[in-house]
Image 1 (spheres, rainbow, N blue to C red):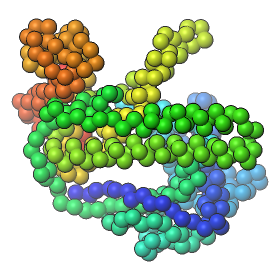
Image 2: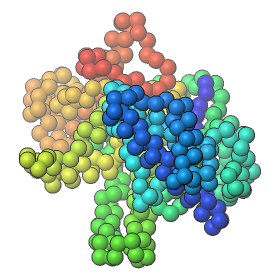
Image 3: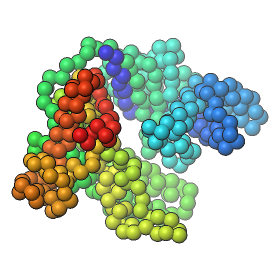
Image 4: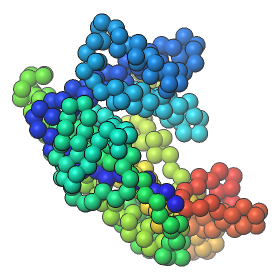
Length: 408
Protein backbone atom coordinates (compact mmCIF):
# COMPACT_ATOMS: atom_id res chain seq x y z
CA UNK A 1 0.00 0.00 0.00
CA UNK A 2 1.39 3.39 -1.02
CA UNK A 3 0.94 6.16 1.56
CA UNK A 4 1.48 9.84 0.79
CA UNK A 5 2.43 12.04 3.74
CA UNK A 6 3.68 15.57 4.29
CA UNK A 7 6.28 16.73 6.82
CA UNK A 8 6.13 20.45 7.54
CA UNK A 9 8.87 22.47 9.25
CA UNK A 10 9.75 26.05 10.08
CA UNK A 11 12.21 27.41 7.52
CA UNK A 12 15.01 29.74 8.63
CA UNK A 13 16.36 31.53 5.54
CA UNK A 14 18.98 34.26 5.68
CA UNK A 15 17.99 37.80 4.72
CA UNK A 16 19.30 37.28 1.19
CA UNK A 17 17.47 33.95 0.87
CA UNK A 18 14.25 35.45 2.23
CA UNK A 19 14.47 38.24 -0.32
CA UNK A 20 14.96 35.70 -3.12
CA UNK A 21 12.00 33.65 -1.85
CA UNK A 22 9.80 36.74 -1.80
CA UNK A 23 10.83 37.49 -5.37
CA UNK A 24 10.05 33.94 -6.53
CA UNK A 25 6.73 33.90 -4.69
CA UNK A 26 5.80 37.26 -6.20
CA UNK A 27 6.46 35.99 -9.73
CA UNK A 28 4.44 32.82 -9.02
CA UNK A 29 1.56 34.89 -7.64
CA UNK A 30 1.67 37.17 -10.69
CA UNK A 31 1.60 34.27 -13.15
CA UNK A 32 -1.40 32.75 -11.31
CA UNK A 33 -3.31 36.03 -11.61
CA UNK A 34 -2.20 36.54 -15.22
CA UNK A 35 -3.18 32.99 -16.16
CA UNK A 36 -6.49 33.30 -14.32
CA UNK A 37 -7.37 36.49 -16.20
CA UNK A 38 -6.41 34.88 -19.53
CA UNK A 39 -8.36 31.66 -18.94
CA UNK A 40 -11.38 33.66 -17.72
CA UNK A 41 -11.25 35.72 -20.91
CA UNK A 42 -11.12 32.56 -23.03
CA UNK A 43 -14.04 30.98 -21.19
CA UNK A 44 -16.11 34.16 -21.49
CA UNK A 45 -15.44 34.11 -25.24
CA UNK A 46 -16.87 30.59 -25.48
CA UNK A 47 -13.52 28.83 -25.88
CA UNK A 48 -12.50 25.65 -24.10
CA UNK A 49 -10.33 25.62 -21.03
CA UNK A 50 -6.70 25.17 -22.17
CA UNK A 51 -4.87 22.11 -20.92
CA UNK A 52 -1.99 22.33 -18.49
CA UNK A 53 0.41 21.68 -21.38
CA UNK A 54 -1.17 24.49 -23.40
CA UNK A 55 -0.85 26.85 -20.43
CA UNK A 56 2.86 26.06 -20.20
CA UNK A 57 3.26 26.90 -23.90
CA UNK A 58 1.44 30.17 -23.24
CA UNK A 59 3.86 30.82 -20.37
CA UNK A 60 6.79 30.65 -22.78
CA UNK A 61 5.11 33.29 -24.95
CA UNK A 62 4.32 35.50 -21.95
CA UNK A 63 7.94 35.46 -20.80
CA UNK A 64 8.91 36.88 -24.20
CA UNK A 65 6.75 39.99 -23.76
CA UNK A 66 8.75 43.16 -22.93
CA UNK A 67 6.42 44.15 -20.09
CA UNK A 68 6.89 40.70 -18.50
CA UNK A 69 10.65 40.59 -18.76
CA UNK A 70 10.93 40.36 -14.97
CA UNK A 71 9.65 36.76 -15.18
CA UNK A 72 13.08 35.75 -16.46
CA UNK A 73 14.31 36.11 -12.85
CA UNK A 74 11.77 33.53 -11.65
CA UNK A 75 12.23 29.76 -11.47
CA UNK A 76 10.39 28.26 -14.44
CA UNK A 77 9.29 25.11 -12.59
CA UNK A 78 7.53 27.25 -9.96
CA UNK A 79 5.58 29.11 -12.64
CA UNK A 80 4.63 25.89 -14.43
CA UNK A 81 3.40 24.38 -11.17
CA UNK A 82 1.26 27.47 -10.51
CA UNK A 83 -0.39 27.11 -13.92
CA UNK A 84 -0.90 23.41 -13.25
CA UNK A 85 -2.60 24.27 -9.96
CA UNK A 86 -4.75 26.82 -11.80
CA UNK A 87 -5.83 24.18 -14.32
CA UNK A 88 -6.74 21.79 -11.49
CA UNK A 89 -8.72 24.55 -9.76
CA UNK A 90 -10.78 25.13 -12.90
CA UNK A 91 -11.39 21.38 -13.27
CA UNK A 92 -12.68 21.19 -9.69
CA UNK A 93 -14.93 24.16 -10.42
CA UNK A 94 -16.46 22.38 -13.43
CA UNK A 95 -16.94 19.09 -11.54
CA UNK A 96 -20.56 19.13 -10.36
CA UNK A 97 -19.88 16.46 -7.76
CA UNK A 98 -17.40 18.69 -5.92
CA UNK A 99 -19.38 21.95 -6.26
CA UNK A 100 -16.12 23.88 -5.84
CA UNK A 101 -15.94 27.63 -6.30
CA UNK A 102 -14.10 29.21 -9.22
CA UNK A 103 -10.46 30.19 -8.64
CA UNK A 104 -9.86 33.70 -7.36
CA UNK A 105 -7.05 36.20 -7.70
CA UNK A 106 -4.26 36.11 -5.13
CA UNK A 107 -3.36 39.29 -3.24
CA UNK A 108 0.03 40.23 -1.85
CA UNK A 109 -1.59 41.73 1.24
CA UNK A 110 -2.83 38.30 2.36
CA UNK A 111 0.79 37.19 2.93
CA UNK A 112 0.08 33.55 2.04
CA UNK A 113 2.38 32.85 -0.90
CA UNK A 114 3.84 29.49 -1.84
CA UNK A 115 6.07 27.87 -4.47
CA UNK A 116 6.62 24.18 -5.18
CA UNK A 117 9.84 22.43 -6.21
CA UNK A 118 9.21 19.17 -8.09
CA UNK A 119 11.69 16.43 -9.06
CA UNK A 120 13.28 16.73 -5.64
CA UNK A 121 15.96 14.07 -6.23
CA UNK A 122 17.14 15.85 -9.37
CA UNK A 123 17.23 19.49 -8.30
CA UNK A 124 17.20 19.47 -4.47
CA UNK A 125 19.02 17.80 -1.63
CA UNK A 126 18.32 17.12 2.05
CA UNK A 127 21.05 17.05 4.67
CA UNK A 128 19.81 16.80 8.26
CA UNK A 129 18.61 20.25 9.31
CA UNK A 130 19.11 21.98 5.98
CA UNK A 131 17.81 21.63 2.46
CA UNK A 132 19.42 22.65 -0.82
CA UNK A 133 17.03 24.47 -3.16
CA UNK A 134 17.64 25.55 -6.77
CA UNK A 135 17.50 28.99 -8.42
CA UNK A 136 20.31 30.49 -6.37
CA UNK A 137 18.86 29.71 -2.94
CA UNK A 138 21.48 27.16 -1.94
CA UNK A 139 21.42 25.52 1.48
CA UNK A 140 18.58 26.75 3.71
CA UNK A 141 18.25 25.80 7.38
CA UNK A 142 15.00 24.51 8.88
CA UNK A 143 13.85 23.27 12.29
CA UNK A 144 13.73 19.50 11.92
CA UNK A 145 11.45 18.47 14.79
CA UNK A 146 11.15 14.91 13.43
CA UNK A 147 12.81 12.81 10.76
CA UNK A 148 11.57 12.80 7.18
CA UNK A 149 10.53 9.22 6.44
CA UNK A 150 9.93 8.07 2.86
CA UNK A 151 10.92 9.11 -0.64
CA UNK A 152 10.60 12.87 -1.12
CA UNK A 153 8.61 13.71 -4.26
CA UNK A 154 8.42 17.50 -3.97
CA UNK A 155 8.88 20.36 -1.54
CA UNK A 156 6.61 23.38 -1.01
CA UNK A 157 7.90 26.61 0.49
CA UNK A 158 5.19 28.87 1.92
CA UNK A 159 4.91 32.11 3.85
CA UNK A 160 2.37 32.73 6.61
CA UNK A 161 2.24 35.84 8.79
CA UNK A 162 5.84 36.73 8.03
CA UNK A 163 7.22 33.24 8.73
CA UNK A 164 8.60 30.77 6.20
CA UNK A 165 7.77 27.06 6.15
CA UNK A 166 8.76 24.07 4.05
CA UNK A 167 6.65 20.96 3.51
CA UNK A 168 8.09 17.73 2.09
CA UNK A 169 5.63 15.41 0.37
CA UNK A 170 6.84 11.83 0.63
CA UNK A 171 5.69 8.41 -0.55
CA UNK A 172 6.06 5.34 1.65
CA UNK A 173 5.35 1.73 0.71
CA UNK A 174 3.76 -0.22 3.59
CA UNK A 175 1.89 -3.48 4.00
CA UNK A 176 -1.88 -3.34 3.84
CA UNK A 177 -2.81 -2.17 7.36
CA UNK A 178 -5.22 -4.04 9.62
CA UNK A 179 -6.91 -1.88 12.23
CA UNK A 180 -6.13 -3.00 15.80
CA UNK A 181 -9.74 -2.42 16.86
CA UNK A 182 -12.96 -4.06 15.67
CA UNK A 183 -15.46 -1.57 17.08
CA UNK A 184 -17.72 0.86 15.22
CA UNK A 185 -18.72 4.27 16.52
CA UNK A 186 -21.12 7.01 15.55
CA UNK A 187 -19.90 10.62 15.76
CA UNK A 188 -22.15 13.64 16.13
CA UNK A 189 -20.38 16.96 15.51
CA UNK A 190 -21.74 20.03 17.24
CA UNK A 191 -21.03 23.49 18.59
CA UNK A 192 -21.53 23.17 22.35
CA UNK A 193 -19.63 19.87 22.10
CA UNK A 194 -17.09 19.36 19.35
CA UNK A 195 -17.79 15.64 19.00
CA UNK A 196 -20.09 13.24 20.84
CA UNK A 197 -19.63 9.50 20.30
CA UNK A 198 -22.37 6.90 20.47
CA UNK A 199 -20.67 5.27 23.48
CA UNK A 200 -21.12 8.48 25.49
CA UNK A 201 -17.63 9.90 25.04
CA UNK A 202 -17.65 13.69 24.70
CA UNK A 203 -14.91 15.95 23.33
CA UNK A 204 -15.37 19.53 24.45
CA UNK A 205 -14.65 22.34 21.98
CA UNK A 206 -11.49 24.40 22.21
CA UNK A 207 -13.13 27.59 20.76
CA UNK A 208 -9.81 29.15 19.78
CA UNK A 209 -11.41 31.98 17.78
CA UNK A 210 -14.00 32.80 20.45
CA UNK A 211 -11.36 32.95 23.16
CA UNK A 212 -9.23 35.36 21.11
CA UNK A 213 -12.06 37.35 19.53
CA UNK A 214 -11.81 40.29 21.95
CA UNK A 215 -8.06 40.60 21.41
CA UNK A 216 -8.51 40.38 17.64
CA UNK A 217 -11.17 43.10 17.70
CA UNK A 218 -8.90 45.36 19.75
CA UNK A 219 -6.02 44.91 17.30
CA UNK A 220 -8.33 45.61 14.35
CA UNK A 221 -9.59 48.83 15.97
CA UNK A 222 -6.01 49.94 16.46
CA UNK A 223 -5.31 49.16 12.80
CA UNK A 224 -8.26 51.29 11.67
CA UNK A 225 -6.80 54.34 13.46
CA UNK A 226 -3.46 54.16 11.66
CA UNK A 227 -2.51 55.67 8.30
CA UNK A 228 -2.98 53.01 5.65
CA UNK A 229 0.27 51.46 4.34
CA UNK A 230 2.39 53.40 6.86
CA UNK A 231 5.14 51.65 8.83
CA UNK A 232 2.99 51.43 11.97
CA UNK A 233 0.04 50.17 9.90
CA UNK A 234 2.19 47.34 8.49
CA UNK A 235 3.42 46.41 11.98
CA UNK A 236 -0.14 46.31 13.29
CA UNK A 237 -1.30 44.21 10.33
CA UNK A 238 1.54 41.78 11.02
CA UNK A 239 0.31 41.43 14.63
CA UNK A 240 -3.18 40.57 13.39
CA UNK A 241 -1.79 38.01 10.96
CA UNK A 242 0.23 36.34 13.72
CA UNK A 243 -2.85 36.15 15.92
CA UNK A 244 -4.84 34.49 13.12
CA UNK A 245 -2.06 31.91 12.72
CA UNK A 246 -2.06 31.35 16.50
CA UNK A 247 -5.83 30.74 16.47
CA UNK A 248 -5.55 28.31 13.57
CA UNK A 249 -2.66 26.42 15.20
CA UNK A 250 -4.60 25.92 18.45
CA UNK A 251 -7.60 24.57 16.53
CA UNK A 252 -5.51 22.29 14.31
CA UNK A 253 -3.48 20.89 17.20
CA UNK A 254 -6.60 20.07 19.22
CA UNK A 255 -8.29 18.43 16.23
CA UNK A 256 -5.24 16.25 15.67
CA UNK A 257 -5.39 15.04 19.26
CA UNK A 258 -9.12 14.29 19.04
CA UNK A 259 -9.00 12.53 15.67
CA UNK A 260 -5.96 10.47 16.65
CA UNK A 261 -7.74 9.25 19.79
CA UNK A 262 -10.90 8.33 17.89
CA UNK A 263 -9.21 6.69 14.91
CA UNK A 264 -6.91 4.55 17.05
CA UNK A 265 -9.79 3.14 19.13
CA UNK A 266 -12.42 2.44 16.45
CA UNK A 267 -12.18 0.60 13.14
CA UNK A 268 -15.31 2.16 11.63
CA UNK A 269 -16.40 5.74 12.22
CA UNK A 270 -19.82 6.86 10.98
CA UNK A 271 -20.27 10.59 10.53
CA UNK A 272 -22.82 12.94 9.01
CA UNK A 273 -22.23 14.19 5.49
CA UNK A 274 -22.48 17.85 6.51
CA UNK A 275 -22.34 20.61 3.90
CA UNK A 276 -20.37 23.08 6.00
CA UNK A 277 -20.15 25.74 3.30
CA UNK A 278 -23.94 25.77 2.91
CA UNK A 279 -24.55 25.72 6.67
CA UNK A 280 -22.28 28.73 7.21
CA UNK A 281 -23.60 30.94 4.42
CA UNK A 282 -24.33 34.56 5.25
CA UNK A 283 -27.93 35.61 5.94
CA UNK A 284 -27.48 39.25 4.87
CA UNK A 285 -29.53 38.78 1.71
CA UNK A 286 -29.53 41.41 -1.04
CA UNK A 287 -30.09 45.17 -1.25
CA UNK A 288 -33.63 44.56 -2.47
CA UNK A 289 -34.43 41.83 0.05
CA UNK A 290 -32.60 42.02 3.35
CA UNK A 291 -32.04 38.89 5.41
CA UNK A 292 -33.61 38.06 8.76
CA UNK A 293 -31.85 37.46 12.09
CA UNK A 294 -28.56 38.46 10.48
CA UNK A 295 -26.65 38.94 13.75
CA UNK A 296 -27.79 35.60 15.16
CA UNK A 297 -26.90 33.78 11.96
CA UNK A 298 -23.54 35.53 11.85
CA UNK A 299 -22.76 34.30 15.37
CA UNK A 300 -23.84 30.78 14.45
CA UNK A 301 -21.61 30.85 11.37
CA UNK A 302 -18.62 31.89 13.47
CA UNK A 303 -19.30 29.09 15.93
CA UNK A 304 -19.58 26.50 13.15
CA UNK A 305 -16.36 27.59 11.48
CA UNK A 306 -14.58 27.83 14.84
CA UNK A 307 -15.07 24.09 15.40
CA UNK A 308 -13.39 23.05 12.13
CA UNK A 309 -15.85 20.32 11.13
CA UNK A 310 -14.34 19.94 7.66
CA UNK A 311 -10.83 19.59 9.08
CA UNK A 312 -12.15 17.07 11.64
CA UNK A 313 -13.55 14.92 8.84
CA UNK A 314 -10.44 15.30 6.67
CA UNK A 315 -8.16 14.14 9.46
CA UNK A 316 -10.37 11.18 10.31
CA UNK A 317 -10.41 10.10 6.67
CA UNK A 318 -6.68 9.92 6.09
CA UNK A 319 -5.85 8.58 9.55
CA UNK A 320 -8.34 5.75 9.14
CA UNK A 321 -6.92 4.94 5.70
CA UNK A 322 -3.43 4.70 7.22
CA UNK A 323 -4.64 2.43 10.04
CA UNK A 324 -6.84 0.23 7.83
CA UNK A 325 -10.10 1.58 9.20
CA UNK A 326 -13.06 3.18 7.49
CA UNK A 327 -15.09 6.38 7.60
CA UNK A 328 -18.74 6.25 6.52
CA UNK A 329 -20.58 9.48 5.67
CA UNK A 330 -24.38 9.20 5.94
CA UNK A 331 -27.25 11.55 5.21
CA UNK A 332 -27.74 13.80 8.28
CA UNK A 333 -31.52 14.18 7.81
CA UNK A 334 -33.56 13.71 11.05
CA UNK A 335 -30.71 12.18 13.07
CA UNK A 336 -31.40 14.69 15.86
CA UNK A 337 -35.20 14.11 15.86
CA UNK A 338 -35.26 10.31 15.67
CA UNK A 339 -35.52 8.18 18.78
CA UNK A 340 -32.61 5.75 19.02
CA UNK A 341 -34.80 3.34 21.03
CA UNK A 342 -38.08 3.02 19.10
CA UNK A 343 -37.26 4.86 15.89
CA UNK A 344 -40.07 7.43 16.18
CA UNK A 345 -39.15 10.69 14.42
CA UNK A 346 -40.68 13.99 15.43
CA UNK A 347 -39.37 17.50 16.04
CA UNK A 348 -40.97 17.58 19.51
CA UNK A 349 -38.68 14.74 20.63
CA UNK A 350 -35.83 17.20 21.03
CA UNK A 351 -37.09 19.60 23.64
CA UNK A 352 -33.87 21.61 23.97
CA UNK A 353 -30.29 21.74 22.77
CA UNK A 354 -29.21 18.97 25.15
CA UNK A 355 -32.42 17.19 26.14
CA UNK A 356 -34.10 14.40 24.15
CA UNK A 357 -37.36 12.77 25.32
CA UNK A 358 -39.27 10.55 22.92
CA UNK A 359 -42.95 11.49 22.93
CA UNK A 360 -43.89 7.91 22.00
CA UNK A 361 -41.85 5.58 24.21
CA UNK A 362 -40.55 8.04 26.81
CA UNK A 363 -36.88 7.29 26.08
CA UNK A 364 -34.63 9.95 27.64
CA UNK A 365 -31.04 10.68 26.74
CA UNK A 366 -28.65 13.49 26.00
CA UNK A 367 -29.61 14.82 22.57
CA UNK A 368 -26.08 14.56 21.17
CA UNK A 369 -25.62 10.98 22.35
CA UNK A 370 -29.02 10.05 20.88
CA UNK A 371 -27.99 11.61 17.58
CA UNK A 372 -24.66 9.76 17.57
CA UNK A 373 -26.50 6.45 18.13
CA UNK A 374 -28.81 7.20 15.22
CA UNK A 375 -25.78 7.96 13.06
CA UNK A 376 -24.20 4.62 14.01
CA UNK A 377 -27.47 2.77 13.33
CA UNK A 378 -27.68 4.38 9.88
CA UNK A 379 -24.15 3.19 9.16
CA UNK A 380 -25.00 -0.37 10.20
CA UNK A 381 -28.11 -0.25 8.00
CA UNK A 382 -26.05 0.78 4.98
CA UNK A 383 -23.54 -2.01 5.54
CA UNK A 384 -26.37 -4.55 5.94
CA UNK A 385 -27.93 -3.42 2.67
CA UNK A 386 -24.61 -3.70 0.87
CA UNK A 387 -23.97 -7.21 2.17
CA UNK A 388 -27.45 -8.37 1.17
CA UNK A 389 -26.97 -6.83 -2.24
CA UNK A 390 -23.55 -8.47 -2.64
CA UNK A 391 -21.83 -5.07 -2.52
CA UNK A 392 -19.04 -5.33 0.00
CA UNK A 393 -17.56 -2.19 1.56
CA UNK A 394 -14.57 -0.71 -0.19
CA UNK A 395 -11.09 -0.79 1.24
CA UNK A 396 -9.87 1.64 3.85
CA UNK A 397 -10.98 5.21 3.41
CA UNK A 398 -14.19 7.20 3.11
CA UNK A 399 -17.28 6.52 1.08
CA UNK A 400 -19.91 9.13 0.42
CA UNK A 401 -23.30 7.47 0.31
CA UNK A 402 -26.27 8.61 -1.73
CA UNK A 403 -29.26 10.02 0.10
CA UNK A 404 -31.42 7.15 -1.07
CA UNK A 405 -29.21 4.50 0.48
CA UNK A 406 -28.22 6.43 3.58
CA UNK A 407 -31.80 6.93 4.76
CA UNK A 408 -32.59 3.21 4.84
